[in-house]
Image (tube, rainbow, N blue to C red):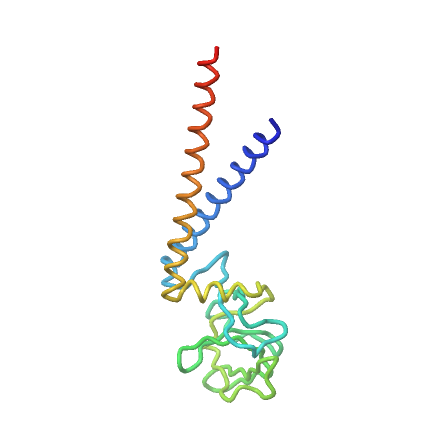
Length: 190
């Protein structure tokens, strides 16, 4: 009797987790479509860290949450803030501000990776800042995200959940049929 209760609770937990994951993925996909390709959760964009320039605080392979900023905020950063900015070759970089300069054409930020020996060669125009890093990071999850975006990863992440759902459905159907057979056997024995 206890085993049945435990299995019933495990079944409920697994079902609820699968439904919650499905809702979360659907919300993320919808958010991505609405924002034009940049997934955003509660005003934060999730970015994968590809280099060790900000280690040890931000490790390679981590996912960081970068707060989306308004046009007015772009020129309000101070020395010590960590910003994400677009470099000339359309590559996003997250580095710490070491110096702020006011010029006739706007604000320029001198940046440096915490793990780098020298400042970045090109100052960052305030207009190129896309977000502010505020300390939220999840180590190693970025490796999974990068793999999922690769051709092999997208196949794995599409097929494996489908196989798991089919297997779980098959198990549930088999268990229900077994219960029906047990009831028939009990009814026949009477």
